[in-house]
Image (cartoon, rainbow, N blue to C red):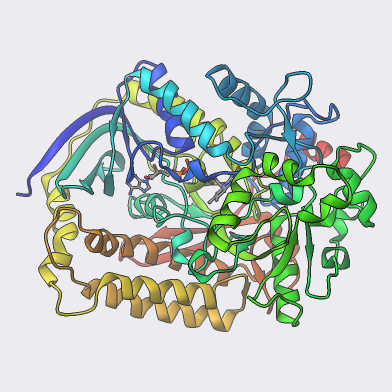
Length: 604
Ligand SMILES: Cc1cc2nc3c(=O)[nH]c(=O)nc-3n(C[C@H](O)[C@H](O)[C@H](O)COP(=O)(O)OP(=O)(O)OC[C@H]3O[C@@H](n4cnc5c(N)ncnc54)[C@H](O)[C@@H]3O)c2cc1C
């Protein structure tokens, strides 16, 4: 029998980023007992890194904005394979969630008349991102944490969950280990909310931190939940490319929102060269108009640098591939040029983009108020994840809820910048509310000891194998390299089939990985346990991407470069089979109600 500590909660929330904290606050406010588990220290979740802002149609800067425009923008950005109900709820409820955050103490930047300031961002028709300089995530986490800490939530920090535990079909708990001491923990709960974030560490170049290893996706999949849209990975157009040690670190879209422009080595604003048909009417066709838009001229259209991320990334890749890239394999992003237009430009840039200024100064010795940055695409976000009911956030497994980046539906084929932070607030709240309701109605389940024994045996297996063979990092690096090369920004069937074969080989290598030492402070052991998650999400991405034989949003195939209307009516779903294999299927999207169709038409 393994030794473990047991904790009991009505609702267990796994993940303490924006979605997890918001879910925990809501469940606790409903009067149930709540446990909150996170891999790092409270306050260090990925959400803290968010820079640009929270998208919500507050209409503080442009009174033409409304939930309807936000809904239409989100659907267009997602290329109409979004879950329409989630997109509707998100657009309707985001303003209230932002005001609530303000009431809980968030210090947003302000308009001249004292309201929450909103900035321009890619794919949003009007200035819509409530922000705090370029440190919005930090303020969001601080506020949620300060508020949540007074709600009587039990926090289990530096604890990794490795298994969900079930009683029949229902999820009734989780098994994990303390990262510091290596001791095991068993959580009993009537409902579990997954809020574990994304999968970026499956790729070599990424803006994501070490925490993003696809844990929630894999926990849900292993427990029988469906994953959808896994082929839709977002490659953000602007990550740092130099020096190599910082490659992939994000350069916020806020730089372009404040007037930053993209140029190739010939100094050409190449984004004007290819404007997609469905955005032509909303996009400036000259530099002057684009500049006026960034300065708040309501009669101007957005510059093409603020087109959706999938498109901007592909244009950058084209420039680099065709030999017009920078010395370090990127393109130029220039905000310093605004000194030609405004007085005190350097001070203005430092005030609006303080983190970007420091990031480049300290990591690359570049002063962005004086010279351009070199940037290129970086793996940033996954639109795919656990399929949930739009209203309640429950998955197809009773008692298992998901919210935030590990859940899917709202973003379709491509997420608009800023829509994640609002997603966390809107659907984090809903997940907490409905998990609490579920828990209030249910009796605790029983957990069979064999499940716990098996989870403990699996966790200790890398020690049993010892250090004679390959270590976990070699397998992790090989996986990241392969996913980047074969299932990256531009895909095709033959490369992805090679990736599938490669994944088979990597699974065998992962099963043989061994570690030394003991369970205290042992990062090699943690990395060995992450491999199952990284391999599972990589397989789901690859199989789904092979199945979607078209190009849409974040998924671009050079063997099927166009959109295919038939694929515009369905999601790709993956589910674990009884024999452990991964089944891929096509699930029809529910039809869009007439009144929402009308909104989309009106906003075209
Ligand atoms: C640099 C950067 C800038 C961004 N800027 C913006 C922006 O301006 N606007 C916007 O809308 N979006 C932005 N995004 C995206 C956005 O930040 C994320 O999508 C969002 O924060 C995800 O929140 P989350 O609550 O789902 O997960 P996270 O904030 O990542 O939290 C995940 C939590 O789960 C825990 N966890 C994970 N696995 C386990 C496990 N096995 N056991 C226990 N705990 C676990 C982690 O410890 C963590 O607490 C940005 C992303 C990056 C990387």
